[in-house]
Image 1 (cartoon, rainbow, N blue to C red):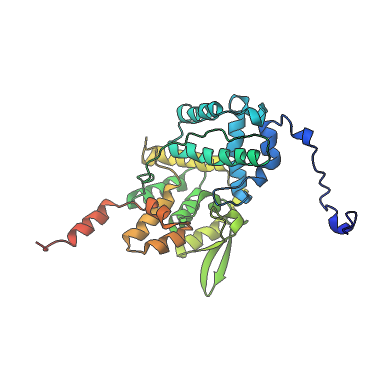
Image 2 (image 1 turned 90 degrees about the vertical axis):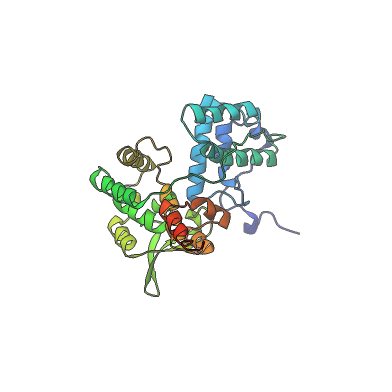
Length: 309
């Protein structure tokens, strides 16, 4: 017979289970605040690290809209979610793809509410139909030179080094922001890498990102990026660069650096599987969406057919 009073069965955290009545009428905000660490993504893994922070940030915007956060979790309807999506599209100018990213964090929230028996069924989420080809954008060689010059001459000069690392590695924004703190420089067999732990990886898999000489020099100059990185500054810097390099181009964003890296590899004849491995993609399908065909590459392809007929 088990002795439930033994140290083995005492909860070290001092956690006291809630009474059933304490769950009644719990607000949406409070539900998210207390249980977001239990929400699970598309791969069935609980949210952790940077992904948890970004996801909760999206849910906080959902809560702020029309004061939905103070509404009991069991009173949130499909109409509320549709109104929020319309707000994102019409008021904030978000794309359908970005709206779907908000849906990908709203859905697990209500799935957990169902599992916890706080609601009986999921509210319907009307996902946006998106062109599966991804954003038709990459930076050409002239734009790369211009963007780096803009960053070198702007208030946030360190963005020039961030841009250099981004172009040469294809790293995600969240990964770049952790350079020098959670994403660190390592040397293996005389080669230099940035080590990304699984907690900071979108795919939840640790990986090594190889660094060429340009990227290595930029990483050393940057040091601990967390000391001056702010997502708002990243966004402002890219809006500023867009105005200087490609005014009015809504697809001119920092994420295009990843598209550019993939496209340059593809133009050089790199294997699709290897490109995906380098970028940390979970599937080759994702890699295919990142690769854009440049006009120069099309001309090269055409020249191969010269003299055939």
